[in-house]
Image (cartoon, rainbow, N blue to C red):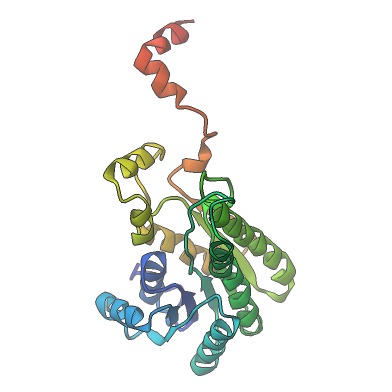
Length: 274
């Protein structure tokens, strides 16, 4: 990470930066020379992260922001771009989860999930676009493989992340002529506090990992690497894409593991011999 400084002197704004993928992304951009504007719900959590990770020199703006509040996120973007002189990259990363069927979750839960996971991407991007036009900058959104397919019990989250995927594509088409690229990553399971809170039972985590061809959940650093790539000049001809980072989960059809089931029963020997 320290050998390549693709973002030397560039200003990068990251939402949801205090932990998980946001923290890893802040560390990655700092290591590559970026000047950072970071926000999260808690300014104290941000300050602790910056101290813990040693990126204080790079992190010039720290702000407590509820990204679902259009005035708050717009003020954060405006202040960062104006005080730091420019804005080159916006990473819309903040997000929350929500469990339940449509007839189980409340209207408040639905609206809050949409507000944080989808509205915030619209609000942040809307505020950033004037500055990105000037810099020839880009936007990278954190979506999810849950925005590409359905998960039992995650209706609100799936819909919100699907919205992020298609908003990414629409902005890419709308603003390509202005020199602005817009892409998103679609993580699978990532070993962050958010995932561990949902998969708190070790047996559930083991069951999840059995579904991943690579045999494990991803790391926040692996997601940050994808974000940094899409934001860099290495991706100069890439816009409107969804970079899936899931250890092979979505490469499968979702059908039963016939290979394992057949071999367990010895059926493979008969089939392979014809």
